[in-house]
Amino acid sequence: GGPAATAQYAAAHYHRAAAGDRASSAARGPGGRFAEGAAAALTLLKPLADASRQFAMFRCSDAIASLEKLPPAQYATGHVLCLVGRAHAEMVDYPSARHAFEWARAVDPRRLEGMEVYSTVLWHLKREVELSHLSQVVVGLDRLSPHTWCVLGNCFSLQKEHETALRYFQRALQLDPGCTYAHTLCGHEYFANEDFEKATACYRAALRLDSRHYSAWYGLGTVYYRQEKYELSEYHFRHALSINSRSSVLFCYLGMAQHALRRNGDALELLQRAIALDGRNPLAKYERAAVLLSEDRFQDALEELESLKEVAPREASVFFLMGRIYKKLNLPEEAMVNFSTALDLKPVSGDVNLIKSAIEKLHVPDDGEEDDL
Image (cartoon, rainbow, N blue to C red):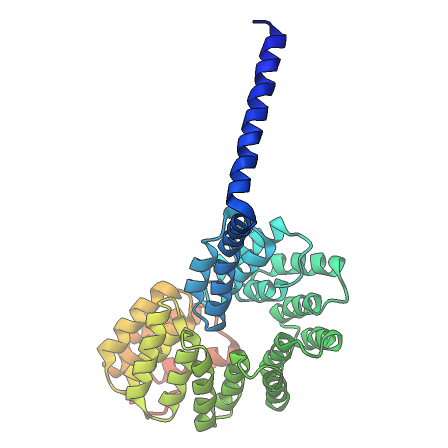
């Protein structure tokens, strides 16, 4: 009944349990153990494989759902969380993407892969301080990584220092000439500088590396749209949509090209699909209102702009367009209120002159050639 007897009993119990485990393992045999291992591996690999396949088809919400089936210990890894962040970024859900990338950095602080996409997310969210901090961190990790120089380029791009941004993106390409993302970012910077010839060359370089890189097809479409080559822009936007058919942005720009080609029915349908895919897409709502205005559907256009005000309450172009509609409805007081609000929101100088001109012509009949902001 003393400690020695207790220890003797415990030892005997252990040996019986161990013998039972050995017998059970022998009964299963090598094949049974292999099957158990294969099942465990499948539990880990199948969600990753499913997510990779779905992401390649830009079914981003499905990809996220597949990754969420992973065990918590595997989900909370840098690789998986960066995939989640990229999927949210593709869906233009930048706050959720930012959260995923922040989590990825917390669990894998030395990770560089994926940080170029994270920097683009911060660029869209206009998070200058966070992007500057990320730039300092990645430079400290590896100055010879193309991901580092893409992050630095995005940091200076956000500060409107396009020439510096271009130098950094080109440095990324020196380190890795096959970096499709860097070619596209260079194209965006040249586009911002209105150097359309060099922008086109960058987008085409990206497509030579990856013909399914829809962002480069979109970039070419925007170049041709700006050059008023609307048939060419339509072709490139359609090709981008054939790769990523779930992009609200692509449907919006294709709708804009159709409006420029005076195919208003098709434009309205495409813009409505853009809004259905992303109800927070302010450009799609604005462009749909502009098409409705050109069709003299004034009340429908006003309703679209009223809903847009909830998404973009400080956008001068929204109030300017509402002012134009009220003028067409022969409601000069309401028009004046909206024109004044547009001025109060401090638009760029060229837009200020356009608004002031509209106010001066408030009681002059429209000539049908009004410009948008």
